[in-house]
Image (cartoon, rainbow, N blue to C red):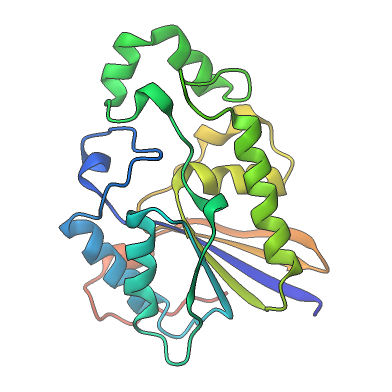
Length: 215
């Protein structure tokens, strides 16, 4: 097929998101707001049914995907892909941003400015994150599907976008990406085009509101 569409969805809110804590590899569940955000996303995607749905193994992403997929009629089963897990932040996991800034000020500044040159203590080098992002893209492009959805995490989505469009590592934390926001990428004969980023219009309306996704 000449055209393929990739919809990237960040998971819903957790209590650690509210507290500005680094979650990374920690398996933190959605909170009540996160469940509601996923319901609103399900309303938005009710008629946009993918051929393939790839999901991070972490609970906050998997539960988001479950809620969305429950609305599909004849949609695909959820396919867990380990490469979609969030970046491991090592010693920072469970700490708030403020706590990290106080305890690891030099590391934090270096990592925020250029994650390719700095790694949180015990964390995952961004080079490895890039490799995972490339494997995700490779799977998307190699599968026989016109529409692919990936439910994952903010850090990994940013890494995928940076990989697709040859952006420097220093750019990744400059993209705002809200909980249950979507990113759309269209591939024409394998060449990517960014169609939208941080689309969260469905989060400002009531549950049950029809707001079709034009993608």
